[in-house]
Length: 405
Image 1 (tube, rainbow, N blue to C red):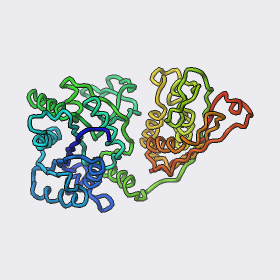
Image 2 (spheres, helix red, strand yellow):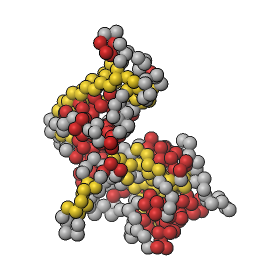
Image 3 (tube, one colour):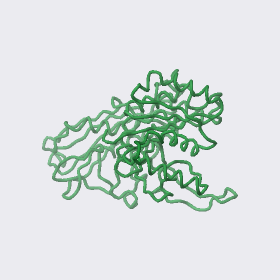
Image 4 (cartoon, rainbow, N blue to C red):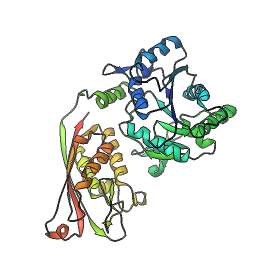
């Protein structure tokens, strides 16, 4: 990783009341493994310097002992682990974790080269790639968080619960953890919040209120926060592949074609290719991603890409098609479906695509919240026939299966 020294504060003081558990959420087991263990596995893989786990203040000795039992084969000797008591709010708990890290700063230094990653133990599915991308972005900008687009229509209600007005969702995103910050930036934000009595739901809000900009990186649909029993079921399927009670499998087909023109980037499957021309379109023109979107929407009976992201809507001008794909996956989930697999074929005379197919699969799989082996991408030529064979454009076919959950 390109980030400097990295520490981690793991917020594990949540009670789990809404989950209906008789133990704090961090210690609830999935596949026989506590949620906290999955998080500590990622911390270890990231190569952090020091980890602080913040647990409920009640029965602190019990939870401290439990954390060290869980971490026995995860946190190594060169990655010190400390357990501290949390506060009455998440903000107070994170502040307690930061105070525990105070001694990690070199004598006489300000810790400005240190990155602090703050993560909820109730989010056990965050990938190592996400941890790394947030840490790298925080190293550059001083503050970074993962976000996902909002796919639902948003409304503001008045005090009586009646609709007051609609909110443009174009620039509305959902924040996740891990969130990364330079150590002094986060400490200063918490100090300012304490002095002014401000309470916020995440650390990025405190940093922003203290006048420091926050960089957004792409989040993960699979980075589920466990709050309800239904969330726990979703996490279980993600982590250990337990078969859920599901409805029938449904199949959808998608096709998309765009002309090749001068002055445009060539993007396929989220991968930018070096070529003299690019695909024309209202968004980035990624015909492969567009074909997959139509296949998924068709399988779930949710319309098509043109109705979801109309060309006359300026919100989608030059949009990243992988962001659109992620939004569609979220819409499928809201409708009670999850992708199972996708198979696609790109039709292009030029450029040569075979060296890039694996990277396309990886990026698409990440957005679909699927293992790479569940996403197949092939390429073929037009052999000189038709508009594809003459090199006038690039098309893609896709078949997708979804399952009711």
